[in-house]
Length: 178
Image (cartoon, rainbow, N blue to C red; front, top):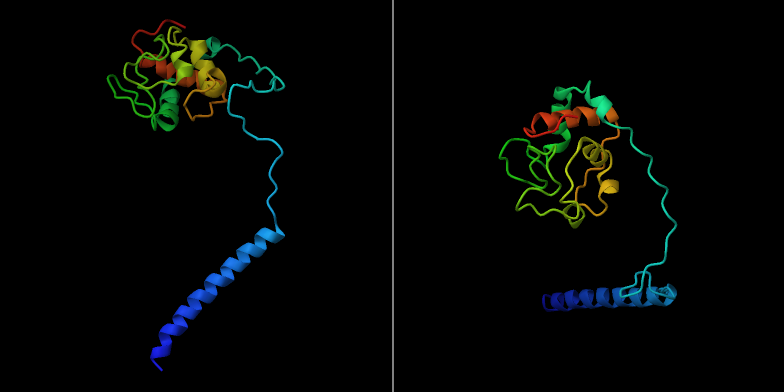
């Protein structure tokens, strides 16, 4: 009786293989794949078709009036909760996922040597981080510099942006007056 145990195991494996093979074959016969008539993604020199222009984003209100009553401590809290996971905030701090933010107000875009900025920000390297530039960036980084690598979606509340900018000004020794 023991000599038939091996045969039973081999028969079970073969039966399972044949069953799965026939099921796959029947599935392909019953549900044939339908391929698109033309490629969905084109690779090559063809220019993409013009898409409808996106509506222009609403202009942001100036941040300078809100800076007069901005709360630096609230800005520090916002920075610690929303920025510190990717950025360091101390003098001489090393860059992490994002660059160190010490001295950012008034500094040029993409100013930290050795940090791998996105091409979108490197293209703005001669432009300083003014209060209005920071406001636009913090409101919606993707709209400010399309193609940047920052995954943060933005800070919608204008007073919170003013508080955060006031904090960034407090850690920027060469910051211009608002």
